[in-house]
Length: 312
Ligand SMILES: [Zn+2]
Image (cartoon, rainbow, N blue to C red; front, side):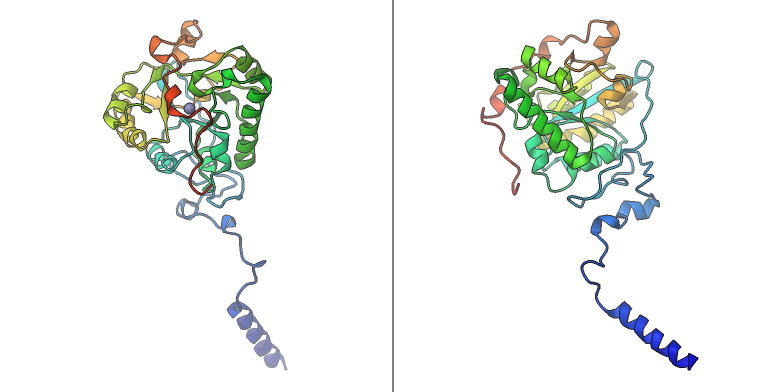
């Protein structure tokens, strides 16, 4: 009798294993450990992943779990040579290869994203930025000249973008970079209301104009500690420039930090304008050098905004 029960149970178990799982039984793709998780043994609830372990806290599944940022780094940029690389206008088709390059160099950066592109990104690129330890900033919804808009328009541009990023990543941004660097009283007031510090730049690589990696490298490497470098991850020439740029600056002893890391992890004052950390350390608020004047980007986009990524 007992033998008979064992045989029946064995048959049932074998049948259960062979039968295809119903959709409800199948594990969601995002629940499986990623290749990186398996190879590093990383638990996504406790990622502990630096940017060198790309994607350990990240799932590519659209609509998957929110990304877990790596532990906060403590870098004293008053003692070590820091540079903040900033990439505007993405995410775009070249952003993911760029993230791979940054991860290989254990470099962190700040991405000023367009809300419209975040909302149209079905690849989880913005989530990976967070999981790799990069910082996100608000670059408006579709790249208008914010200072030309009435108050409600500015409010909508910034709020929609904040909501899109929050929805995709769970991150609430604390930084804004007005498109073209075009700011004014209304933009400052609305930034302050939405808890956003305005971060411009003090080194312009002009990568939007000169689509040559060598020119981008030359301009990005002619810097001083505390520099905020303007780049755009929507141009392939910029992404090609980044490995060389990182190698050169690493040789010169630079550490690549996010803007918040550069400013000591302290919250920047919402509404206020910042250009570079060195200027702030000097006590002049980081006033822009002539090269950092806004307006040069104006011809890049039609006034009605930017085209969406294909398929979005
Ligand atoms: Zn821009």
